[in-house]
Length: 383
Image 1: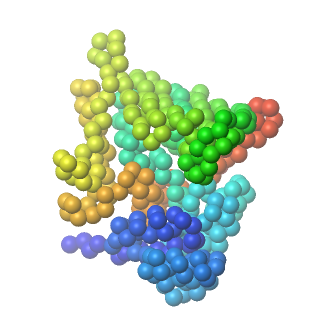
Image 2: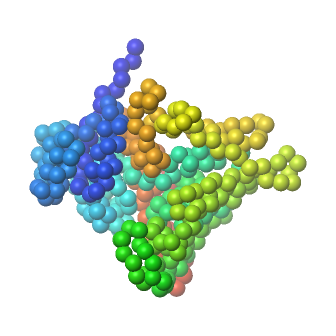
Image 3: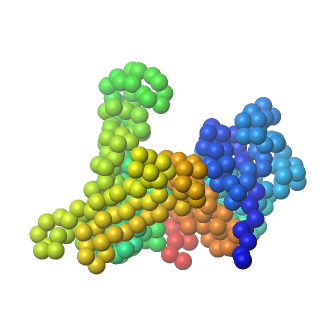
């Protein structure tokens, strides 16, 4: 009889809000596979608050945290500008790490983290959860099934900002698709006075629109659109991701977080779209945790494609009922845990995260050059 693997011991490095409201509860929900043992913060007061909230010892000295609590891996959850510095510190202390997004503000910092991890023999996963959300996962399963054939073009149309939106766009083309160049257009525009959900303010606002065209090896194309007020403005309510494929297309239609998926193949006579029905199956007919999403394709040879929630409770009704984003972030954690145990690679990893950030920075650089294409390095992708 095979025994269950021992729990991996986890430290949270950083006292950002996500450390408390997101990672603490997620790690409790992933017991006994992952076990939270300690937290670290720069300042005693913030470290103590987080430790008290999560019920674990707190430290301001990472070496002392490691000596006393012996974590196997760390979740680095700090302000975005500090990702590079703190992520490198954790790696240089010999910890496998889940880094928050972006992997680092600059490519030089990202490269330093990756190089240090290779030197120390530790694993890095990055908390890019957008493509891990259930509705994105069933779309990726459908694309992997071959029903759609080759995806020719992919769009992020306000589905997510920066690296998040780039990652969603690239996921439809396949993370192995190699981007070659980016052309960008970035402009600021004044907006009428209105309420900001995130800031809780009213008054005139300014938005920054970002638009990018990414050329991929083999002729595939990615298009990126974002506005800086896309998450909290009644003026910018649209949210959509799209792909155009050889045998069909996919389109998400969103008003804020109320998003509907429209996926289509061809009817047998080749004369009309055959729409795919997506069914969310829960534990009970009146609710409960998500069990799976089933795509009813209308294709006789492959009538259903299914994504199974790996975090559904083993015993019905006895476990967390996570929403889609929590499921996505939990997927990042288990990807890292799996790599640590197997010695293999995380399913997304630092090179993919670096590339997402490189595309964002190249789009901004292209815009500064008046739209001139910027060639990409894309190291580590496709081999």
